[in-house]
Image (tube, rainbow over all chains, first blue to last red; front, top):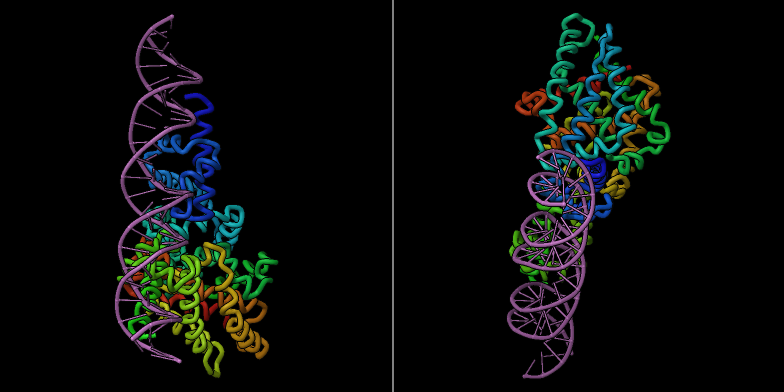
Length: 195
Length: 195
DNA sequence: CGATTGACTGACCGATCGGTCAACATTAAT
DNA sequence: ATTAATGTTGACCGATCGGTCAGTCAATCG
C-alpha cells in the first residue's frame, strides 16, 4: 500500500466530508465527490462498498472528532457552577472552529439517524451525574432533570451556527459579537440553576 | 374552475408538504409526489413551474401557518415573567401538534434559506420590546439581550422534536414525560431571568 | 351549435444517478 | 523475471431524475 493510495482514499473521505456536511446525503452525487477529490468515480467503489457506506464512514469520522473533543468537556473543576460555565464556553469555541459538525448532526437528525444519540450518551451520563451531585450538595438548584440542562446548551450552541440565516434577521448583533451572545446565554443558564 | 380541479392541486400541495417535511427537498422526487397525490407527474408541471417553485409554494404555506400561530404567542398578560412562561408553553403545545414545522425549518436552515428569518422578525421585535420594558421596570434581570432568550426557547423546543432520535438516548424519560421536560426547561429559563 | 379555455394525461427526452466490469498500472514478494 | 495483489481507469448499464409536448376531455361562453 503506497503513500499515493492512502492519499487518494483519504482525499475521497475529506472531500466527501465537506460536501456531505455542506449539502447533505441526497444532494451530493458520487460524481461530485470524485471530481472534487480528483479521482474517478470507480475508485470510490474500489475503496467503499457503496454511497451509503461512504456516508457511514464519513459520519463515524465526524462523530469520532466530536466524541474525542468531548473528553475535555467536563474537566476537573471544584465548583460545579463554574464547571458548567467552562464547559459551555469550551463547547462554543469548539463548534466555532468546527462549524460543519452541527450541520452534520442536523442532517443525521433529519434522517432519524440513531447513531449520534448512542455516541455521546456515556459522556452525558457522567455530566448528569456531576450535576445531580451538585444538586444533592446544595450547590445547584434542585428538582430539574440534568439532561434538560445539557440538552439546552448543546442545542442552542449547535443551532446558533446552523440557523444563522434565521437568527441574524432577528438581531444581527448576535453574530457581529459572538462573545456577547455566548456570554448572555451562559449567564441566563447559570442564573437558572443557581441554588 | 370546478371543485375537482381545486382538489387535485390542493392534494399535490398537501402530499408535497408531507413528503418534503419528512425527507427534504432532494430526497423527494416528483414521481413520488404524483403517486402519493394520485395524479400524473405532468399535472404537477401544469400547476407549478417546476420542482423548485413547488417547494417554495409549500414553504410559504408552512411559514404562514407558523406566522399565523405566532400572533397568539405574546398575548396580553400583565406579569412579563408569566408572559414568558405562557408563551413557551403555548409554543411547545403548538409544535407538539404540528411536529413537521420544525423539520421544515431545519431543512430550510441547512439550505441557508433566509425566508424563515424575515418572516417572524417583526414578532420577535415585539417580544424583545416587551422584555426590554420588563427589564427597565425592574421586573426582569437586566443586562442580557432579549433575542438570546427568545432564540433559546424557540431553538430548544424545535430541536426537542427534530432530534428526538438523539436526545432520547440521553434520557428516555424526556420523551416519556414531555410535560416534565417542558416544565423543567421553562423553570430553568424563568429562574435565569428573574430580577 | 362551434370555439375557447383550463384541467389532465401518456409518451417521450436528455441528463444524471448509483453501480458494474474488464482491463491496465504499479508495487511488493517470490 | 514472474507472479500476485492492489490501485486506478474508462466504457458501459438500467433506472430514475426533472422536464417537455402534443393532445384528450369536460366545462364554459358566444
